[in-house]
Structure formats: C-alpha cells, structure tokens
Length: 427
Figure: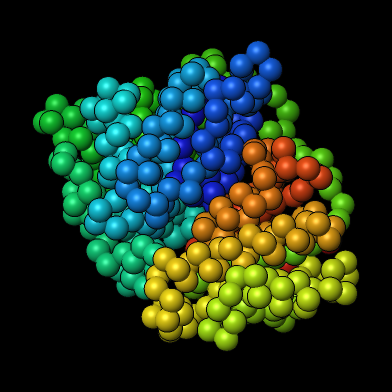
C-alpha cells in the first residue's frame, strides 16, 4: 500500500478512488473502519496500491467522527501506507463545529506533522478555489444552492474563514499568483506558512494543471486534505520514486448480469436534473414521507411498485425533492429524524431489490449510499471504469452475490448520468 485515505462519506470515497485509478493505481475502497484482524491472509492489507476507508462521518457528532477517523488511520498505518489523505467533499460540506477541522486536527496530531494543505477544488466538476473562495458552477458556494443543503448548509464561500472557525490552529492561503508559478513556488509558500506556525494552507486551484502542481509540491507531506481533485498529482509522485509499477488496466472488472435499478436520495440540483431526464426514458417511483411517514411503509410501497418492472429496463426509486419540500419534511419530523426516515427506507429497498435479482445499482447521495451499502453488508469495493468524472462503477466484495454499484455524489454527473451508467454495461 502506497497511499492510505480516509473519506468522510461513501460517494466521496469512490470519487477519490476513481481519480487514483485514472492515475494508474490499483485501488480498493473499504466500507467502515476495518479491524486489524480483517486485513486478510497473514494480516496483510488488500492487494492494491491505494486503499480508501469510507466512513459515514461527514454529519456524525464531532467526537464520533474523530474517533472513527483515528481508527482508520491506525489501520492504514499498520498496513504500511507511506502517505495519508483525508478526503472531504469538493463543496467543503461541514458546519462551523466541524467535522473537517476537528478530524484534520486529530490526524495532524496523530501523525506529528504539524501542517496540512486544504484544497477541495475539482475544476472538471466546476469546483474552483480563487483567493481562498470556493466557487461551484461558476458562482460563489453560498449562491450555488449549497446554502440550502438539508444537513450542511454552506453560507460562507471564504474557506480561510470557514476552516478557521473549526480549528484552534491558524489558517493561511497560497493564492492563485503563487500556484500559477508551479510546484516549486507552491512548496516554498507552504513551507513558509508552516514556519510561521500556520496549521493549514488553503490552496487556490482553478485548473487541472494547478492540481497536478499542488500534488507534486506535497510529495513529502505526511497528510494531504481536500477533494478528490487534489489526488490528481499523487500517482506521478509514487511513479517518479520508482514505487508505482505499471500493471495492466487498473479499472478492469468482470461482467455481472442481473436486473438494474437506481436509488436516489440526494436533493442536489444536479441529481434533480438527472431525475428529470430519467423520467423521459425510465419508470420512476417517488417516495413521499409527508403522506407516508413510516420507513417500512415507504419501502413496501416502492417494492410493490417495482414488482413486474424489474428486468426490462432500469427502474428508478427516488426520495429526492426540491428545497421547499425538503423544508416541509424537516419542519414536520425534524432534520435528523427526516434524514433517518429516508435512509432507513432506502436501505431496506436496496436490500430487497438485491434479493429480487438486482445486480447492477446506482445509488445517488452520500447518506443514501452509506445506508444502502451498510444494509447490504458490503465490506469492500474494487474500483472500475468511470461513468462521469468522480463516479466509477465498482464491484462489491464480501456481500454475497456479485454486485455492481455506482455510488454517486449528489452534485456529480451529467444530466443523462442514470441512463449513461447502464448503457456502459450494455443494459
């Protein structure tokens, strides 16, 4: 194992894995904190260049998120990882209490490195950082729709301010003018900030070339934090050091036959657009917790609708809704209770669909994906070909029958993502 990564949600983990596979690293995603006894035969980690531990810690209580992340770090260190990565969303999803700052603080302390860069930029998916401000889709983060996120509303685009509110350390900035000069200038600037006593450096990036340069500049950093884009330059570091060998196509997966389905719990603008496009081609069933406020009943209704529809074309079961409906559901049940209601229903639906022969499934939304894979008992994912930037097909391992899963971050994917995903598999 060369790179050991900790991701704060499941779709973000597959996003990072996809980036590493694209760079030529054989990559495995583990679901939840692994135990040392689960390392494999003779207590060795999976046969991969990179291992990403996917947690469901983005919206967990701070103490729980920190404990899980430190447990994952302990396992990755025991597995021999040479460098570590804390992956969070390209929209810096968090609250003023965390969890990005507290988790990063704990990892820095555990590694004794004293400093880490922070860069959520992913220009391919329209996430850029300029003068410390995060832009999504060409507008400031707090004007992008993320200000209405049901769990982690982002009302401030200034990442220096956002991260400063989550840590007792100080946060500096490596601005565009420095980043545009390349890896040597970036490395010099980060060294200077560390020598000044800064714990973090927000690093600007508006292009893939910037991300590659930042990755090169961080070659010897013990810990890197950011979105998956910042991993773009990491495989080349290992390759230059003679540690990463060429070994065929790292994204090759075996074919899996079976029924096809989409489960969508994300309420992002991108996913709502994808659902709108899917309705033109696929049968869609919408869960309505306002009229049926019971997870078991919601699941039963969806499964009854699915009977007789499995097999011919992919089916879509969605709990996604526009902001005004989300607000109405949260007003009735409370934010946490509303989220749990949907997650429990979708997890039960996922389990029952697999029992009915679904073997190829797209799950949209980080919380929905986490609930679904937990209910399915998935322990690890072998990363395969990319559908859209940041979203690969994966092969679930340790969960019974062969199962292809695509865990999609709510904000990712083109409007035709759902149909495109299955066309790749010949469905």
